[in-house]
Image (cartoon, rainbow, N blue to C red):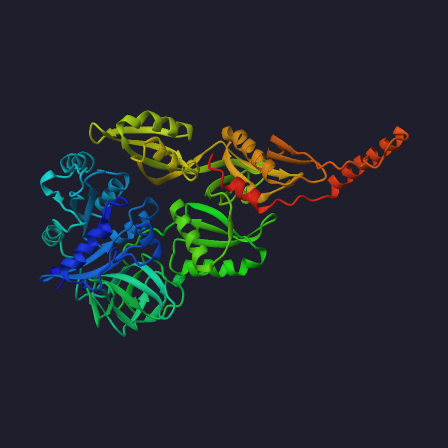
Length: 594
């Protein structure tokens, strides 16, 4: 019955105890026996368990008394906020978890605003009250200031010991409204996620809003226009449990023989082909990768194995994109798009583990917009796509609204860090006498290198940040090229602010001078903007003593040999080639100073 159903998510900053609280719910409701139970029950991926973080949202159906609860455990890292937004669209309520020791953090605020935007009932909970450094009263005051929470509504729990966990379940039943919808109307089910199974094809996660979905129905994707036959449907409890039907208000999975993940659009609406709904449900925007980098095989013969590895990864990650590209220096590879730096790190680690490949990664870049002199606007994802300077009318870069939450004594160093990174100050808000929110508009290109590391270092680990894309704005940007012996090395080209180009160019040529071995002729290494060289280093030639065999005699003989050697080096410099070793690429691309 819909009035006995509750759909809710657990949302919080990273490492505030979402998965641990979900474990307690599974134990309290008996969804998992003590023999089958393990920590992080809903985190399936090996990397999730190793790092102690949630990467993919997971849905689970549990029964609490007479009530049927559909719980969705969500990630906490800013890179996976898209996963959170999709999950909240399938719920009526959210448990907002805050660490009793760390207090309100950046993703706490961001996720709370997401829940408010989706018009969800929020149940505020302070977790980890068993810690020696717990400050529940102070954290409750922070929640009241930052989020407008009523102190009397805030629950206190310890997900680790289970203290107060059942009170949260009771609050879900009492405060979260039952799902609305028309149980007898035409079927409308929202697709909020999908994964690929090598035996059954694509498994679609749905929230049934109106009507009823039965096994054997012929379904239609309303936006894609494709039709399929339902071969299996069910719920996660927490393992897949087949059912004959899913009714209005329920969350479950559908198997219908879909062969490719690309055939399913997250946000699409399922309906029965013979009794179609009049209007699709309002979906949500698709995930747009914000960070791009090139991935090349360490060995030239492994390009096909790399392609297969990337295709396998993309089957279970619709937000990861890749397309083939060619570099004169590194050969055939792929330009890959990610939601953020952690997403990029996760994909690379999975690629190395699951495909056993050695890879070379180029410097990460963001998407830029360029208005050409003929009026056309193009999007550029790599430096190789930047047209000549004479054809560029305007160079635009992505700006993100960044919220930094930190102890108030570190305001000075963090404001200097933001201003050094082309940041524009917005405002300051005090959560308490000891904790503050700083808001800046920053170019995204300044965030993707080491901004987070510098933030953590400057605040002794207590600073956190959240950001969201704001707009493309005109910037004073240039393409910085690296030339070795007069030849462009496209894999080392980068896009940067004009004021930062000289420092970055000088750094690159210094690193390459140390990494490239000496040749029998002088090798110039240059950093250039268009035709203007802004930094140069020379690799001195190896010297062979051609006069060693001359013992005495006329000095003109020695001069003749030296002139012959000089002419040979001139000829070698004009026709000789310099091979840039892999170590040189790694030295530049792993330089954290930039």
